[in-house]
Amino acid sequence: MRYPIVSDHPPVQSHYEKCRRSGTSHSLAEMLAFRQPPVSKTDVEFFRGRKTLRDEYDGTDEDFKELIDSSGRHGYKPGTNDVYLPTIARFHGDPEAFIQPTGGRSQYRRQVEKLGVSCQDLGTRHRQPETDPMESAPKLSAGIIREEAARLAVAEPDLVRRTDAIELRDEIIHRHGPSRATTNRSRTK
Image (cartoon, rainbow, N blue to C red; front, side, top):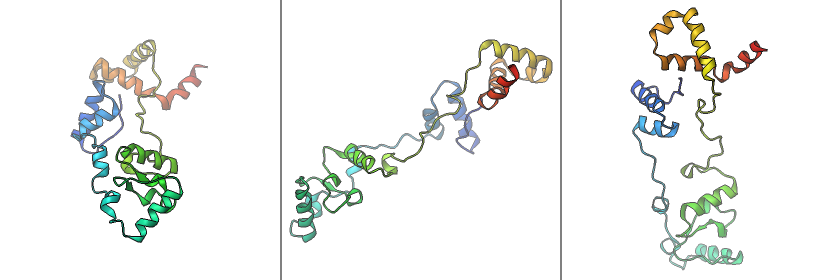
């Protein structure tokens, strides 16, 4: 069976394919092949390096007073532990740009998705999800595989002798996979 190329480095690609042959999903096989665990994305990492309103402003700053007044005019009274993120604010003092300590990443994700913008740190890029093309490949019946193996035994006896049954089966499935499906159907009509 042919798998997507995840690395130009042969040992990594080989390990990926070995994992896939043993039944591991695409994502897990890729993680194991590269020997890299998923990145931890918790609220602790989200808030690291961000200042709360208490840390950011001492209460005498004019901009701070305007920020609090503006959010109050829009129905929100920020707490001292809230974090204000002007990058997601639609206007100065936008109540939805205040992230509460209990809201964290999920509150930020909801706001980013509501605005319809991308944020790579949260994984909210607007793109098609990654899929393994072989997971959606049509299944060939055992009868078709046996017939094709018999045909190959006559047409290409060297190929049949060189490969074991599993590799021969994978080669047949590869030859008659999704890209060949319409050609095969038109021949049978």
